[in-house]
Length: 184
Ligand SMILES: [Zn+2]
Ligand SMILES: [Zn+2]
Image (cartoon, rainbow, N blue to C red; front, side, top):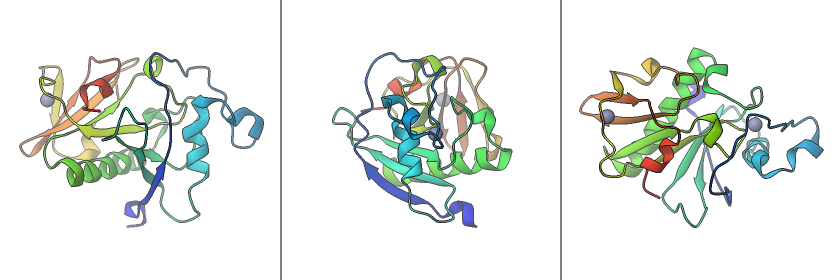
């Protein structure tokens, strides 16, 4: 069960607003001089987690304009930029499970999880946004699955967002920046 032992951290992330593109990010823990840019701040946060067995961790986004936002992310870095597709199936499933559990604690059945596409990410390090789903987000671009393990990878170049409907999970596509569907 070690994958389910989660670290929780709070940090002032000060994620910048607006359009960004991390496709050329260079964050490399082995070379500290590459870790200074803002787009590496979640990579730095991952490295700052205390040693232990937890493979994933949760962070409250202390950005003043996102008071209700949490993030779930891996401690390890992938290739730059880090993508869901770079994880093993077990890691992928566990990361979504961690995010879903936290989302349910925070928002009951009213949560949404979102991963923006690469052109709309401000951080090199992979992260799932956790928030309360805003009104009017539902549409017909989704697949319904039963478990986190069945959540598919985002389509190439697309964002992905997930929310619960009854006993199912809707996995939606077709949004570049689905975090905007979550209340700030
Ligand atoms: Zn990283
Ligand atoms: Zn839906």
